[in-house]
Image 1 (cartoon, helix red, strand yellow):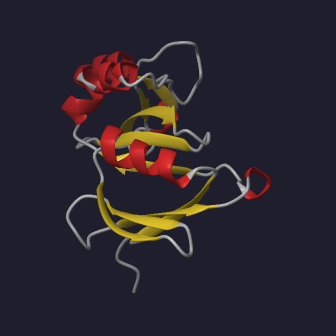
Image 2 (image 1 turned 120 degrees about the horizontal axis):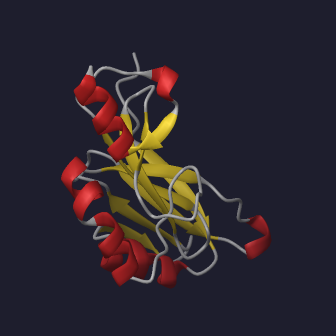
Length: 152
């Protein structure tokens, strides 16, 4: 029945600021804007594959949400931190251990790095790894993951 996630929506305080962020920093393609309802929509990936909707609301109506963008492993490992820092976005990992190194969720397994949008929504770059899940390892650095999985 369910084959995937098609859309998600966020409330934002300033629609123009958020349009600039998602369009010009993250590179999403804006596909629709509605001034009357103060809403903007973006394709994620290929057009009509997945969509993000932004709705302008007063700050008191904004609740912080989380979602993840699927990315390539090489991007997460070699470019994501530099990309985020270049755009004054502070990268952090799931453990919030003070470092900006991506971490592996061993139960999936997937590698991920986090950052926030202008309203504080928690965004993530994630890549499912093509390896056997190892839930007993918990959340570990990619270096630890590589060492353990190469040994076995």
